Image (cartoon, rainbow, N blue to C red; front, side, top):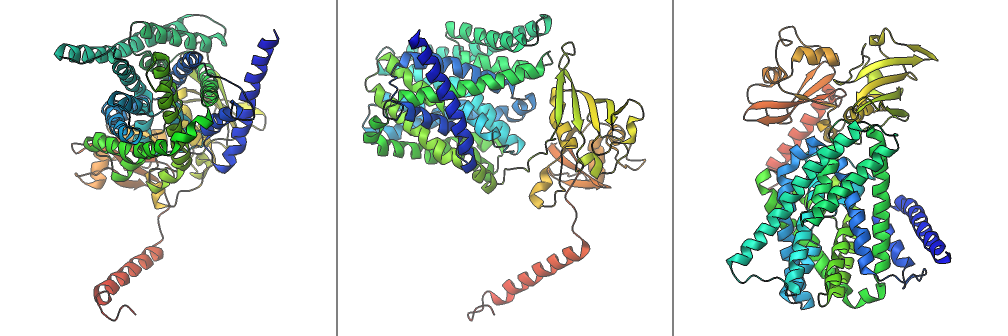
Length: 609
């Protein structure tokens, strides 16, 4: 009994103190996951805590459990639009990119540590994939908002590349222990079929399991608190069944989460909040346990060669793989450089590092220690500089305004519908535009407006005032859009903010319908057009992506143009203010004088005066 109480005391104390330490460290911008890892090391046998923990089998079990829950939450938060937008580049990075990264890193490890080829490439496979938890948490924890395609590529890649790294690790463990070999075409075919089944089986289990979990959540009548437990338990069941037949359970559980997160179901907010909390707990437990598992004094003899491997991974292997994989997808050089930099390594490489130890690979403890150093370097060097890298690469977007007060209620029988109550901010876009009606997205319906304690359900098209409480029936997917409308907002005046839009509309949509929904002042002949026809009538037949036109105080932008057809149009309700005529005149005069100066003076041997 005393031993059980000590376990509970130590576990609760480690989690509590690590959270407090993380809150304090966030003030200096330290990556929170690095804090958890460091706190685990301090609590270990070489630190003040003195806790001795060297059970790799327990670490593997807990790591598998935690990683499955983290990937379930990651799938839950991956929107279908993000997957559609970035499926091609993400799939290339998650497969070819992992192999290339592992190969280049393994080549460096071969000569820096004098390893045999199997062990060197095994190390490359262990650290070859980006960590889903690290990417999800470090991108979203600080409210960092990136260009949609870049953010989608990073998130989807990190969610689906773990199966490739795990497959490579297990295969190379087999070669390192001589249980696998490639002596002929039959062995190559067996190897290829094994890989094919891992991926295909993971997809099949994920799709079928996701459909069954979604059906169970919608059909069973349960207490609201049981729905998230049911969803999580069934997700883990799908994971275990897939693993039991040598398919990728990690890919399967990610797809289960994706299915639940992108289809209407009851208890939307309960499942989302519960999964978020469980993912945080899993992340904390993984990093604390991995911190306890390592012995810092054992890292010192190999620290500098391991540092060289880490820098090779970060500065050579990852960039080379990303540039080759993204070349066909027309990413800009800055976007490609940023995706290369955010190749974060987290708990997954440390978790994979336990597999060679449990399999009896010679020198496995050394591989585990090297992987640990690589994770530390990645979190310190890359995790600490993500906001700076986003600004340098010009992929950061202005943060979206969030309302100070928002209350959200699920409707159990509403199949994903929610009632959301907003308190109108004095600086919200609704008031600043001075419109006579609410420009709500399709699918959102105002139920009532409370003003000075009086609830009114009629005359809702007369607009709102500061302090009004607006109750809206909507879906979970519309809440970010409503946040932008009701949250405090400043006018965008910088050129870099001009790419921001409030709504994304299909080019085939009726201009008249859009005008009525959002209060746009189209000409009578323009109302008969589609948005695609309207954009071409304003901007000419050759419309380029990013081109804009204004309608009164609103801007319309061509977001996606394919084969000369405007597929998607962005609606910016609060575009950057246009410069005054005098300001534009001064700017052009200054540019003209600078051009004349360069033309007549730059080549003068006496130098400019």
